[in-house]
Length: 246
Length: 246
DNA sequence: TGCACGCCTTGACGCAGATCAATTGGATAG
DNA sequence: CTATCCAATTGATCTGCGTCAAGGCGTGCA
Image 1: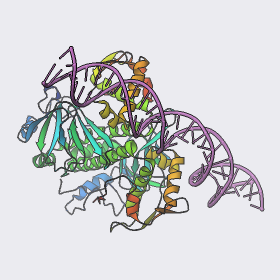
Image 2: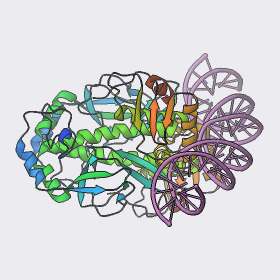
Image 3: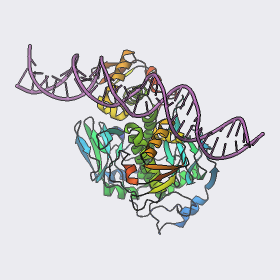
Image 4: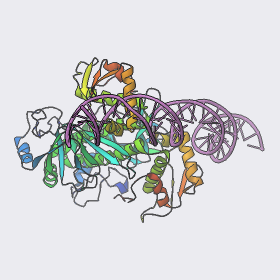
């Protein structure tokens, strides 16, 4: 769409990690300067809650390193994860005063925060930013819709396989397409269950089943080896044309 | 956020219905002129498919009247609705060439379409538009996340009650809050099932159960009467502080 | 008037996944 | 080396919802 993507910072250098699609040589350096003035960093330990749903939220933020989750909780304690935040993902909603979801660090986490008021002012005066945010939000919406199909219509086995495939794709060196790969699970069984709309027992049983069938292997509880990625994706129920994302 | 909301057209007049939060007296008339040049209208009959997933899509659009759905279908025919498009909702993604979901008219439908290329050009030159779209996309993302909780963790009864509450809230004259109301179901049992991640039989049974308990009453198959809205919302599993949206 | 077709309802039954409960295994502390 | 703790596994049983199947009801067409 825009040949001139906003350079709020370069993902590679980790300085200010708002993701952009392609490095662009024509970006204005002063956009970065402006952001420098209103940003600060916060670190969290694995398991720490970053924000509780309903809290006043006077910043927006971007994940620098680590993984966080967005979850919703019902009165009786049922929990559903509704977002998985990976490095460069954006948190918080310009124009809203309170948080709508719990945000929890599942690994050690560093976030780059922007005070909300100046960030919003800057959005108003810097069109690239809202265009970039729109693009990112549309990506998230697509991911949410894929997730809805998983929650509403997939079996437990398909759910697990889908999650493992997502994690494998993003974590492992799968450049070429099919083949072997291995990665660390960033989520506990319970967190996986909250992601998938299952119980942790069902998650555990399905992982054991995949192991028994030789589709995956475990090293410890948290490290997964996938012998043949194609055999895993066969289990996901998805169309078999493995779209490789940019 | 922006005190100066884009006036692409006034929802009330139905001319060009991109929704905006508040009527703004200071809008530039030429923004509207610019849109006039690239827009056109299309009508569909109930049941007609507007776009198939994978189709080349050279426009974006906004719903003028009627209701449309976004659905995803798996190879074996399992279907999940992932979006419900009501008047003033936006369809299509700037920057993407092909449709990601099936779009189907569930009632007679009129859409206001914008040719994509000129629309994108205008987005680039008119910051208000991307800001307005960002706001709308964030609203959709919130709705999708609420929906994920429903799909992942709610029981069949809670799902039905939630859907009826959503339809009642938007359709009926519930200004004051609680009380009686009635409305027409815009969806068939099967479409409700696809929305909720259930089978149509389960939908039918749950509706019968709510009827038996006097929480709702049916007139014909498609008209619902809710005697006491609070008794319905008690069944949704949601927190009981009925947030009234702007 | 009757038949066919679509949509909905209702019943009977089975199973995937939830629930309840016990055990294992790996990590850390004493 | 043993005790403690917590995440994960595994087993036994239960149940909500899916599946399969048989009507019911309204609408349109011959």
